[in-house]
Length: 252
Image 1 (cartoon, rainbow, N blue to C red):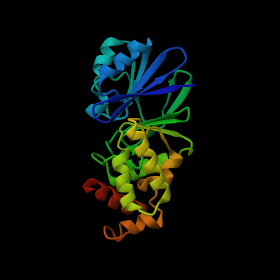
Image 2: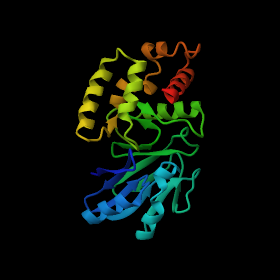
Image 3: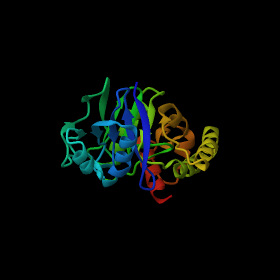
Image 4: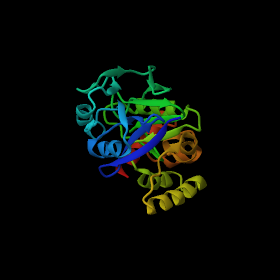
């Protein structure tokens, strides 16, 4: 059984620390080494692996220092987005062994061209692809790629815990409610999120099940979502609906 700890970084990033019962650990997307090293020292952990979802600096900025402190650490990242400290390149469909669990590598192109996710032990580390009530911006890939990546995630078991890399939930919910103002699940979730944030608590992890209820980017077949973008597109196919939603969110 793996235990997950969130290590906040910058304004709204989460670095995820994955720990087993032997005090070994891995971290996902360490944009800043300082809080990671502090946590590892405080809890007397051994850093065995670093998992990278994509090459943006707020996800890899701390890797070099962590490698300096832990020279034998395994640095895993996409073969399409190699970073200088990489020791283990992966691509979609690969498996990696993390302690006693097997994680699958998912190709999640869209936010960047080589973005990957890692899923195993009922947990998904998806970087900047899927957020609670939202999704990442399409910077390097295409809208079709991002739609396809989100479809892959929506097909995972609904109980899968989703560990994304940012605390964007409150802002995403404002947009989601503009898209589906009559979605009662959304209103209930907003109240829950407001309570959590008022106590300075994280809204992550979410689950695939919850996102299917409240995330407009996973609800492209819903009449309420389609209706909300009728003034932005004449097409009703999923990619056109997704594109209209993402462009609306960009300017929201």
